[in-house]
Image 1 (tube, rainbow, N blue to C red):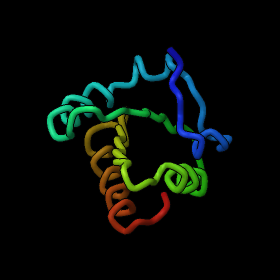
Image 2: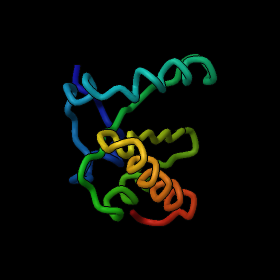
Image 3: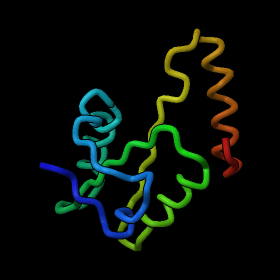
Image 4: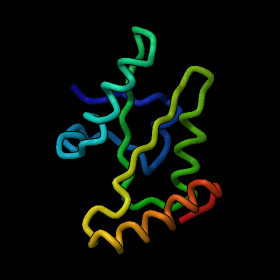
Length: 104
């Protein structure tokens, strides 16, 4: 069954439906059990995968998704294929930008 996105997301060029994209991507299998534990029954999930998107496109997507009853969960593999020390260094830069609310 295709995913249905809220109308506010539907108008964005960078947001689309690709059911198969979620199969090999493992953040849902990590996040969903946690959400099932901490959220009240009856919640719904609208998974989005963002690939190559500009900071402005990500901001537009978040702006369109933010509503009073919406929880936004962001998960990232960051530096998935780098050697350990290089990955740690890249991750520190990414975390610093996230905490500073800055662009990449």
